[in-house]
Length: 148
Image (cartoon, rainbow, N blue to C red):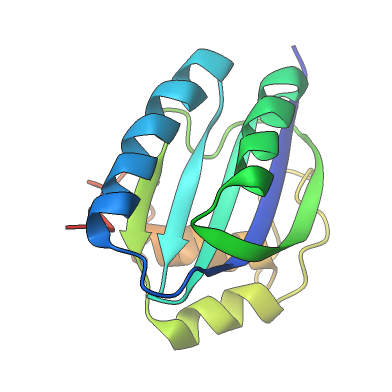
């Protein structure tokens, strides 16, 4: 079954309570698992950056929920397309806090070529992967809760 991916950035709703974020993450984890979608969510305190991957129908369902979520607004798609492999095969909703400067750098990088093997240095996906791994090359680190 062909895999697809979507990366987007959005603005968090002001006064987003940690409990709301925890509830969202728990709900999304269960839904993503049923849809066969994996990926990561990064949060800098004001913006979300998410990379999702999976079968087209599952990804469409998950992204539809993303677009309708009340915890954020101004969803801007950075990239979408077919991919050859999953970068985060074991995470249905891994999450991590990220510093705002790193987030800006990732968002502003070119997001072309997400479908071609290992992304080139300087590409948005490559910067996301490097930020996620912390430079040690391990794509599946222990997730850190974004909420409480």
